[in-house]
Every structure is written in structure tokens, then in C-alpha cells.
Length: 528
Image (tube, rainbow, N blue to C red; front, side):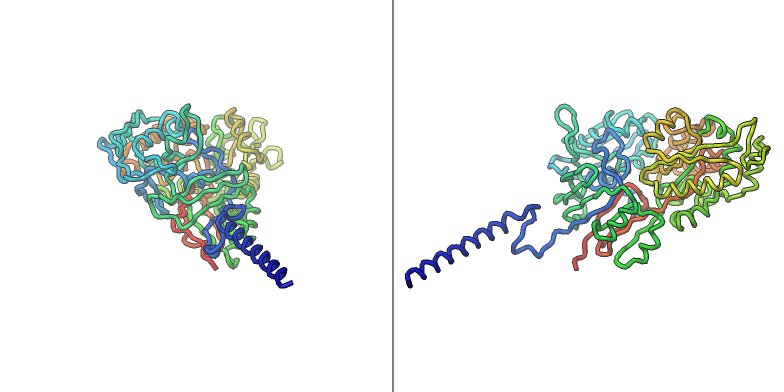
């Protein structure tokens, strides 16, 4: 009997020893998601989840990253020149730059000792690779580039066909420096490889993108171990995800939710005026907006202050026809913008032959009523643009202009625009990377989105962009602002205010005026 009890005890002891070994093994191997447990189980890995409106539609330099893709790009890729939160130009991957001939040649000196995420070196050859003829930026924006040359491993020379303030162009994250290892031997894109603080880990289409910390980052070491971007197209759903803790931070908070979130315990709201301005793009190539008087009448009929205060709940700044946000270079502080003047709007139309002869409150000319269509995209700005369009419709009706609103996908708007089959488009941004005032190119007769042709205007735009002399640029861009206010190739509505919201345990975030950048330097999660 004693012997049997001894054997039973021995078997029980062996069982528990085996169980301990299995448990120890589990601590080393980790659980199903790869997180190690055991002695370090109380030491958390700081992770940040960010709600964005769109997936990354492109990872390579041959196309422009639309929508919120640029916020993800700015963690993986970097530029030669950067901007601080207040849009001051600062060194990026280039530590210095100079022009020996007033802007036709630019020489960049690169930082030393930087490697890409896969260990390949960042050098002059990588810069040349990033600005080849295949790159979107050299085809669409920097066409004057004649050559990009390696002087030595740390020096690159850009040779241009005309003088240009090139460093400002190179701040945009849509044309960063990518590793030549992004492509295979046949030139096919393989994966995103940059020098940024975070590196690409995985992507589930239209759901999430996961990035991990770049342990060998050359700049300030990230506090976060991982950043997960969750794709949540609907603005209201993004807000709900923040409030329920599904995500830690959200971008592009809808204006109607800002005041509520600002008073909600446990939520921090960050606001800053950006370079973006909403505007009405007119089709100046066909009636009725081929008539300057009609364009001016629209400008007089719309109350941008009311739209900003009431429709947008005080978010943003009324533009009153001013093309440049106050944060832009050469934004003229003494420009006299337009205020609503309904009687003047009616007089302009009447003097141009547009009169309400049948009493239906819609003016007509030569038997044709002044009925126009306003195209509004269903895209990422829809939560703002939809109520704005309705307010514009109501105000134009008071002047005798009947407006039909069409909410369309971006591709459908592009098709109508390319065919010239539209009257007005409500849009934002366009050539407003950083503080440099390239935006006026949008109305240049040679621009892809222009529907306006004026030789004097073209000459001013060309001259302004062909000098690196700040005094000359200021004079020319001031003249362009006056020109746009008078000729109205577009009417500018609201200077956008960027809104980011985060749970209060997210610390160290600084909001920037530069829209494509999401700077996570110094951001950390405060543990309870």
C-alpha cells in the first residue's frame, strides 16, 4: 500500500514538472499574435492606432498618393528638405543646400550614416533614383528639371531649365526619397522602403496598415513601437471609434463634432490653420462663367463669414475671395477681400443683361435662365463640402441664380471636367504643399485643372515662379492676389483649419500646418 502511494506521488510530481516545462516553453514562444509573455508581461509595447479616411492607393514614386495615404507615407518616407510645424523650411535628409546661379542649379549636401529600412545606404544614387523620369513629380510638377546628377556619395546636383525655388518643392512627402531596393531587377515595385521613423510591416486592403519602429532611425528615436492606421471612411464612424477606444487618434474630424469633443473628458482636440483653402472652380470656357460679371456676381452673393461661423461652426477662417491662407508665404495681409453684397450681385447681373423678366426669381438672358450645376465630391472632404454647397445654393438663389448640386465620386467629376461638361466644382487645396504659393498655377492656361485663359495672368505666374529672389516673388504674388480677386477665375471660400483628436493618454503630439505630414516625433502613450 505504501509502495503504491509512493508511485502515485511520483507520477503526480512528474505531471506537474511536465506542466511547468510546457508553461515555460509557452513563455518563450509567445501567444498567437507573437507577443512574448512571462517575466516581462507587465512591460507593455507602446502602440498607437490612428483612424484615417482612405487606404493607401499607391506606394511608389510613379503616382501621387491620394487621400490619407500621405499620412502613412510620412512615417515611412522622408524628403530632402522638411518643414517645421509652423512651415519654416528646415533640413531633412539633406543637411544643407545652395544655388550658385540664382536658382537654375541647386546643390544638396546629404546627411551621413543614414540607412534605409532594409539596411541599404542612403546616398546620392538613391536621390537620383527618386527623381528619374519615371517619378510622378518630374513629369507633373518639376518638368524644368534637366538632370539630377551624383557629384559624390553625399552630394547631388539638380540642373533646371529655368530658375526655381526648388527646396520648397522638395518638402512635399508625395515625392520623397525611396530606396532603389523598392523595385526588383526588372523595375517592378516590390515594397515600400524608406528612411523614416517607422517601417512597413503589413497591410490589409481597406482595413489597416501596420508600421513598426525603425530601430536604426537617424533622427529622434520614436517612443512608439508600432503604429496601426485603421481605414474608417465615414467621419462620424471615426469619431465613434475614438470615443469607444477602438482607435487612439483620428484625423479630419468633422466640424460639427469639434465643440462637443472639446468639452468631452478624456479627449484632446488639436486645431491649426493649414495651407488648404476651399474654393469654387469656375468653367470660364463656356457660358455663363465665361462672363466675368457672372463670376463677380457669385463672389458678391456668397457670405463666406456666415458659412464659416454657422455651417462650419466657427472652424476655419472666412476667405472672402482671398486665395492664400494667412499661413502661406506672400499672403498679402493688406489685401481687401470681398464681403457679401447682394444688391451689387444683382446689379452686376442686370448690367450684363441677366434679368428676371417672368417673375420666377431666376434671371435669364436671351431667353435662357441662369441655371448652373455645382459638382461636389463624395470624397474625404464631403462632411464639410456637403453643407457648404447647400448654403451656397441658397445664397445664389437670392441673387437669381438657380444652382443644382450633384454629389459624385472623384472619378466621375474628373471625367466631366476633362470633357468641359461642368459649371462649378467645389474643391480644396491644389498646389499648396508647404508655404510656397504655387497654387496660382491651377488657373494657368497650361495647367491640367485650369479652365481659364488670360495671357497677362500666365505671364505673372511664370515670372513669379522663375525667380529665387524673395522681394521679386513677393511683388509678383501680391499682384496675382489682386488679379484673382478682380477677375475671379475661382472664388475662395474658407481657409481650412486642420482638426486632429486623440484620447488624452496620447501625449507629446504637436499639430502642424502642413497637411500631408503627421509628425509622431515625441508621441507616447501614458500608461495608467
